[in-house]
Image (cartoon, rainbow, N blue to C red):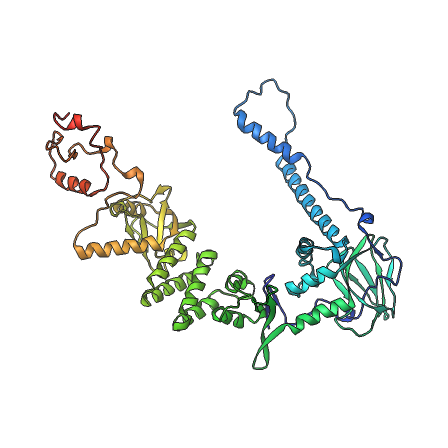
Length: 557
């Protein structure tokens, strides 16, 4: 049965332990041998590395280069310049320097007395410890409590015996640096390295070492937790966990948490569960201490579900329940807004979105539908599609709508199922941005059709834009109902608006309302009155009346 650990999105077996089976009762004591040394800050010899000056010099060089422009370098001696390999080496050195600095900060925190550690120290330790296998199966609260009581110890020389056979154990250890060798009584030898743990089990009973442990290298570093602290922390968590069982099987584990000392914000947070139960928890009543469960689930479900449609099918099913409809809609909106890449390029998830839109339309949830379409348009990325046709007369297997004459771009209206266009990912609602380098954002419908039909190789750039596509369909339906095409008053792009030199020669310019005379061109067009009416309906005037009144008011040009 697969369980999800939310902190790291790991799919784990229930109650599995990272400890070897025969090491459950082994532990390293801090007082049995003198070779194990507790390091004080003054004895550690640790240092915090600092950034070298190379990066700042590079910044100065780049700034100088950008300001100087083209500089005459004639007469300067040739010298060796940095290659790409050297730059990569510098980056590697910087990354290594950052890692060393981080480890030094961790060591400083560990060398403090546990009572002297503040919240920042514990956060620094948590950031480092959560990467180690010994802490993977633990919740955040357990790791935090362990970091607050752990003690740092160092064994300087290789081959030092740190635990002998039959020795009483009272500590739990995690290796931070180096490795140890375990010699079992039957002659078997085993090695543990960084991140592994060994020592007592979480119990107050007396436990003894079975075998001998010695270090395999110099400077072996450990953190240890006393038996009483280890038992108390793990036992406290066990008391605060709530296990949900169905048909005798544990399907979910919750942990009780209090977020403030007043006790007003307390409740259960999900830490583990089966995939089916985690999906079901999406629509259950949210906890005040677990408000981000939906976001966490949408971020981590890929680690334990083979297909997102396992969630999609359930959401469509739950949408039919009136009490769950708003919750399901919120989940889908969060999904589209935060992880739209789950839908792009996946035909099944694209179909899920279309089905969900139909459900919203049927339920007359126009506001939610508008939000969904806006999110899809905002999050969509440009996609490159290549189509090959045998001849120019070969069908496209998709139809388009729109055009600059309607004030819209070119949109894919429908795609034939099973066709080449569908196979390469073209879908209904895609806006065609470019075809073979030709901009399609402001192109007439007929010209777009000619380009698509007269080329056998089509390199098409598209973008999902359902929101504007539906506005286009609504405009077309309005035109059919009113019996005439809609002429946009103002083009979408500023470059398409008329400027004074671009105005037609037969256009009539309105002047001040008090004036009865008008400027007329040499020719009279039949469409002059229509253009005049269109301009009069606009809220702005192309030519300001006052400055030009003397030119146009009495004598004309």
